[in-house]
Length: 307
Image 1 (spheres, rainbow, N blue to C red):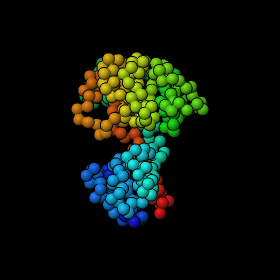
Image 2: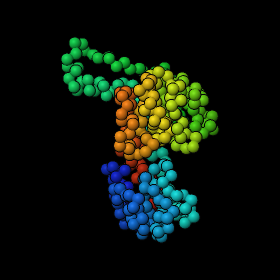
Image 3: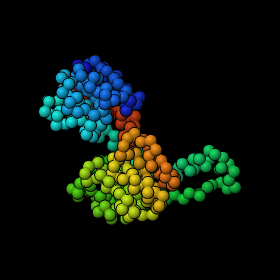
Image 4: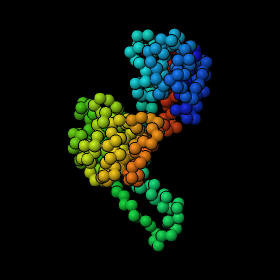
């Protein structure tokens, strides 16, 4: 059995040696659109995180029996074509839940606690010159008794809700599907949630219902001093709207996902004036050591269960 891993760079230093026990393994760190066809032509199994697999590529890969998606989302594979050609497609769900929950709070604490400012205040020598033992020029608030709104109350959203509740926050949520009614938290309309909440975190998938869900008009509804965190998908919050409002209103944004990744050069977000209210990480919320190990183990299991 020949196994081809198309974008191993997305796994970092995660150990991939387990694949060798299953067959002949070819590992590529990255694969361009032009390289994909040649690399999968005689593969029995391909492992892809973000490399797109189209019907025409499957047509030329006559040995292909299984496509393993190293992620939960399956939009990079033509699923209808795979089904027609008798090729199984298996993804991995739930491997990064704890990692994303943790990063949600990491982003919140960075913004709320003004970590960038205080870190630089000490390291640039300003603290050494202070006439007093402390510096509170950037006030911060406690999570306790604040209202935390969650958009998308799936497994990640529920995990965030439990920890927010443990911190003493009042948790509420907006159901992007409109079907989630059985939670212990108060369900609000989107407008209510945005107008009332001090913290808003997004943990929803991108769909027709969530694309540009938070546009300029919605962001205007947010409370002064609110913190908005997107750990769902880029495109749920309109980035042009963020660029405009962040210099007009006191709202902080934490973004782990963008509409186009990697971030395009000269992105307007890089030129906002109020940089202290913006924290962007390069789509890393999913990628703890433990999450990546679990991801690879799950892919191995998917292959074993197929053959």
